[in-house]
Length: 229
Image 1 (tube, helix red, strand yellow):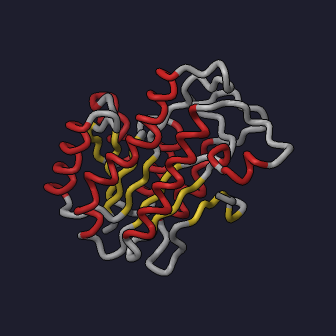
Image 2: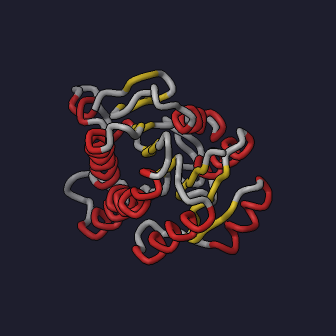
Image 3: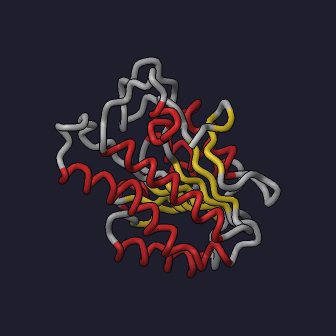
């Protein structure tokens, strides 16, 4: 049975992805900051909640130990935990907000990857899905018609994309990819213009979580195909 960990799994895309993968037969761990609430959510879908705050080393290491004791390996890691921050434009963004967003979205994902690397190595077909965003694409941001004018969030997702590239290169046996769910109406961004549903946004996460050893790696993928770095 496939053992899967989803970080930031108490709501939105994380919870929907966990629910769908549980339905698909995965043994799913919900990485949550509030473990009491997480247990109640996990019980509704047949998953297991574990305390995991990506900004806290101790909880990440403890979560890895819990998965080690419960399953002995990790087949799929979905780095979904993230925050939007203030989304301030250049000249207005604060260093404190930049530090907070990078610590969560990029360093947090790196922290989880580091802690779970031995468990992923123990899998026959390890898969990593880093939940990114098109606003992290340097190519798209460089186009004259680009309209994203913010600092912290795009920087964090660009850094996450580099993490994907480096891990894909360092671990060629793994399948490591960035995905963008697109504009999705969630608690993270409840009123995005033109956004689609959580169910639609989760499609690419679920699909990339279920790829085999012959699937892509080192790619940036949306529901429509390849996204430029």
